[in-house]
Each structure stands twice: as structure tokens, then as C-alpha cells.
Image (cartoon, rainbow, N blue to C red; front, side, top):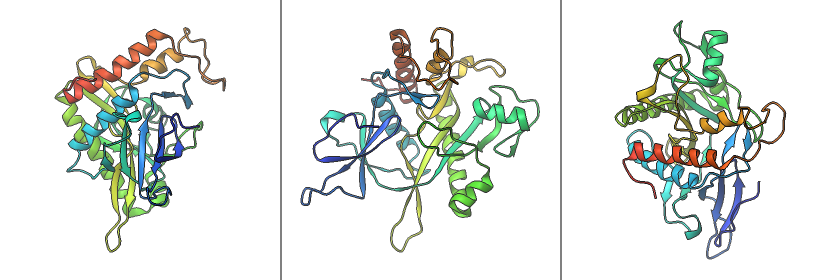
Length: 302
């Protein structure tokens, strides 16, 4: 995927589904630095392994500002990758200068409530990623405690696949596996403790970790990318939460629901690209993102 911007003083490194990475150029040599990255959150939206044609205005800024707020709330739990918010004017508010890390090849997912792919796994096996759960749980049930349910990191356009804990240990080693599992659960638990006071339940979340290696020191896990945002998490209004019913949502579930409705005319199993989003869906989705930001942070967006 091509970068959306040309930024003087930076070299494009990579573009994912919704983020673009640039390396600062050394003023003396003109070479790209290998220790820092500019992480730019675009307004692109992905759903069902497709990047949608229609952007969501201000989405990148909401995700960036909300992540920065959460990094502050989690500072005593885990260090993060942010070096500076002093970024080029063209990406102000939706980019951070961050430390370049050795990223772990595992999607670290924590679940506090049973829904989505975890629910499907539970219905088939009574467990999620090999973790046995109590009988009788339904869509939206609260779990006794947060669980770590990792997946693979699939290339763009392919599905992430569930991993057992043993597979994570084989991939990254026993020590790192134990630490990422513990940190994922702690981040979700801290997030829910804070969000509950603001009327929001965080059903599940995906976090990413990198490894900081310094000479003479133990490798250190660092929280990277984004954290506890509507793109990486399921947010439910606590006032309307009801196990066994379809939950209202602050996240991009609104877009997923429209895409799979008769109104879109799209078959997600067809292999065809999704259609453009109508204006009312765009506006409603933007409003959901902003509402989540304002409810959690207590700040007005914009």
C-alpha cells in the first residue's frame, strides 16, 4: 500500500491497513535513522480483512489522542514507545515519534467478556484458545477474570488464527510468553477499572509489544502501536449491557453491521471489495469514535 503523504525529512518505510510508518532522515547524512519511527494514523478503516474505500474523518486523530491518554494511565504498568508528539504539521494530532522496536510476531488479545471469535470457539469447544471456561456462558457474558487469547499476525488480506499458549511459547520463548500474557491481562483489567467509572465496558482488546534491547540489561517489553482504542477494542455502554443480547457498541461494529446487511448488497465471502460507505454511516461511525474518546478522557475532541 502506498503512503498517503510525502513528508520532507522522512522516508516512507511501510503502510499497513490504517497506519503509515516513516523513518526520520539524519540531517548530516540524509540516511534514514534505524532507531526511530514516525507512526501516522490515517483515516482509513479496515473491516473483514479489507481496507475500505471510504475514510472516516478525524479517525486517525481520535486513535492517536486516545492512545496517548491511555499510555499515561498505564505508565506504571508497562513502558510505551512514544518519544515525542512534536511532528510535521501535515500530520499534527495524528502522529507520534516513537522508538523503533523488535516487534513480537504475536497478536496479544485479552478478553474480559465473551463475544466474537471467542464465543464461536467456546461454543465449539467449551474453551477459548485452549483455556477452559465455565459452562452456560452466552454472548456478552462477563468472564471470571481477563484471559489471554493470542492469535497469529497474518499478512494483510489474510485471517489471524488462534494460538494456544504453548504455540506462543514456541514462537517467542517461555519467559516472554509469560510476560506478554500477564501484561495483556493487566492492561485490560486496568482499562476496565478506569472505563467502568465512565460508563464503558471493554469487552476485549488487542495490544502489541516490542522488545527493547540494551547492552548489559534484560530485554524489556514495551507497549507499542495503539492501545484501548475503538479500532483495537470492543467498547460497550455499561448502561445497556445485557448478556445474551446484541450489545450496542462504540467501535467499528457499526460499519461491520452495515456491510453485512442487505442495504450494502455485499457478500463478505465473495472475495469482492466492500462497497463505499454511505454518508450517514460515515457520520455515525465518526460520532461513535468521538463519543468514546470524550467519554473516556473527559476531554472535548477537536
